[in-house]
Length: 421
Image 1: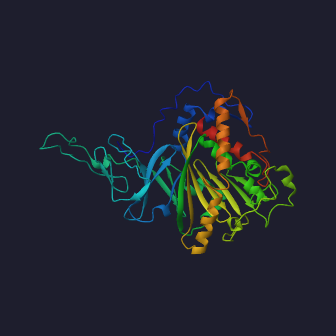
Image 2 (image 1 turned 60 degrees about the vertical axis):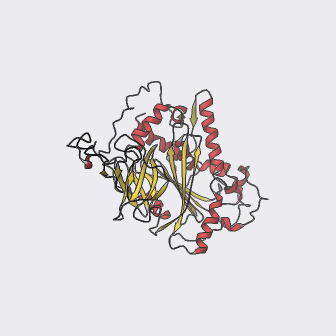
Image 3 (image 1 turned 45 degrees about the vertical axis):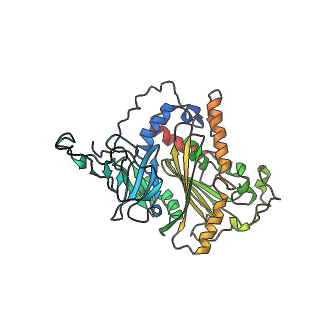
């Protein structure tokens, strides 16, 4: 076994002649959310294909020997920092019999030892020892030509930018900067401006829906003004705000930018279209939505989708990364990592922690997204198959038009090209 990063496309020959994409680009077929063959092909052609996948923040690995469990698509991997400070990523699968050897979420170690037969690897994924390599009393053991350096863990291609770690199964990747393109790179740098990051917390939840629905959700400004009572009621995002939605040249990444005005939108004429607006509702602690200026940006929030597995969020002074981990056609895990900057003073750190009450399992927003995604998955799984619709807006309209499904349609044009559908 070598460290060849490429996978054989074992599912590429699966018979999918019963699946036909509709001719109308505004229609999305149900089977992309439910079909096991599609899910398997996504693992090969997207997550193990020519993509940079988010796997960690460097602040999660501050010291030599630090590691975390992570994922590319459904594949479990390890991200680790070696004694020289270099960050490595490799499969969490022993090269011997395939055991997933690391079961703890994070920690510090000098080496990884598979519990099954104690094959031992260093922090770069290199195999360093094999028990009973020469057998017992000269009998048994490994063949004489067995070489440790030919049986390391499957190592991944790694790229980092401003403290964020991405990995790819492909060695022939374009640079991460070219992968994002200039406009998305500018948005990325708005969140990660080069200052050293500080980890504030991590939580995980499992969602009963297809992983692509979460990408869609963050490319969909239409729902944001209608589903999220909290955003509209307290003026963080309403239809009358100055807003922009950008996509990269290939349509795979996007960013939704919003400039929040001072105060609440009592005088916003758009509120007449929003049934979830509640003028009488008040916050017990208004500091939870207070914006402390810290970015050289005209926008008070950015929601950036980086294809295929990362959502970056800057909302007021909240900074977060949401890692999408597919767990089958009908389920995915979301890993929420919240961070600040190492040079934040104590008051700013407390402010960020306070504001993070907006999101998450006990937050004011986010759980409504989760429930809406479950409703969609329930609908496509239980009903007579038909095509969903993403008809709003026009593809030729500018980024300032936000009542639009343009970014969703762009993503699926790229998806179909990568998947060969």
